[in-house]
Length: 167
Ligand SMILES: Cc1cc2nc3c(=O)[nH]c(=O)nc-3n(C[C@H](O)[C@H](O)[C@H](O)COP(=O)(O)O)c2cc1C
Image (cartoon, rainbow, N blue to C red; front, top):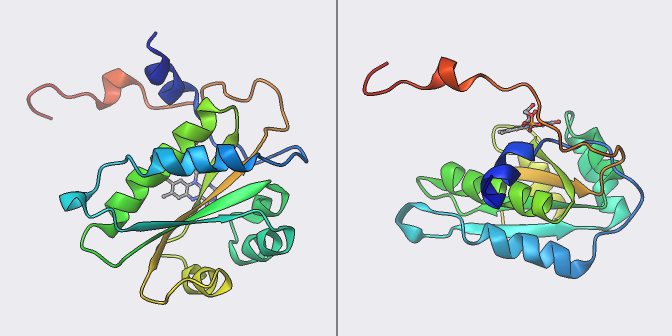
C-alpha cells in the first residue's frame, strides 16, 4: 500500500507516553507539515504554540478536562487561528497534518478539543496569545508507552458510509 495511505490508516489517538523528550527538529518538522494544509482563500490564519515546559503542560492538563494526559506528554502543540470565516476548518486541516506528521515520525499524538471549550480563553492567556486569536485544538505529543499502538481502531465500514451518486 502507498506509504501515505498506510499512514492515514494506522494513525490513532495515543494518550500514554514514555518519559522521553522529542527533539526540537522533529517538533519543527511537524509544524512544517502543518503549514502545508489547505486553507480557505489560502489565508493561512494559523499560529502554532509548542509547549514543552513541564509546568505549562501540567497547567494545560488541569484546564482540559478530557486532556489530563497532557501532563505526561513530552510536548503539545496548541493550534490557534485568527478569527476568519473558516478558521475552524483551516485549523482542523492543520491539526490533521500534525497528527499524521507525528505518526510518520513514530510519535504518538492525540487531538484535545480547543474551540467550543470553556477553557479555550484560559489556554490563550496561559500561552500569552493575543485575545483576538481562537484556540482550535491542543495536540498532545509523546513517544507511545505501549508497543505496537498504531494498530487500527474500529471504524465504520466503507460499505456503510460510501454512497455513489446519491444517498
Ligand atoms: C474535534 C476533536 C476533538 C477531540 N477531543 C478530544 C479530547 O478532548 N480528548 C481526547 O482524549 N480525545 C479527543 N479527540 C480524539 C478522539 O477521541 C479520537 O480521534 C477518536 O476516539 C477516534 O480514535 P482515533 O483517533 O484513534 O482514530 C478529539 C478528536 C477530534 C477530531
